[in-house]
Length: 196
Image (cartoon, rainbow, N blue to C red; front, side, top):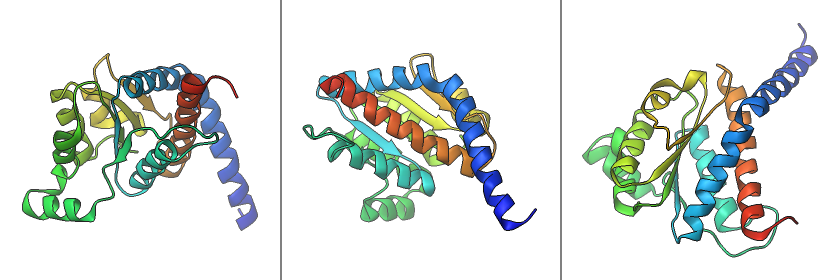
């Protein structure tokens, strides 16, 4: 396979993964958007966490809500738990890396808020700890995973929303996660503002 064929294969694999995900995840994304919008309308907020590329996705989602997605609207309460280097390094150093998000959930999360937990493997220890902290605080959880959902898939309840991408390759999972994030942003805007 030459380089051009390899690149074409990436596109084709991504398209097929997105087709499969659309069939599986569309009603779940709508449910997650309703849950998030209901929280925002009740003066709640959305806390978001993830590691590596998922940290970038967490920040992307929060930026779209605080700023704007595609339409002007009032700022929405969303906070990426991945951005405060002093908190991350202090908690990681003084406690453990597994607590960098859960301590922030305990500090900022209240009943009725939503945690958007992102982990391509579904096995990130600090994301699992954040989910457990959110549950203890009466928050709802929306999880973005792949690879069968991992440990996160095992601990979610029927009240939570699990968006598990039907793939095992991290790149494909992350590509669908970004699309899910954009779908959530659009659905939240439509629920708040109506059709554009």
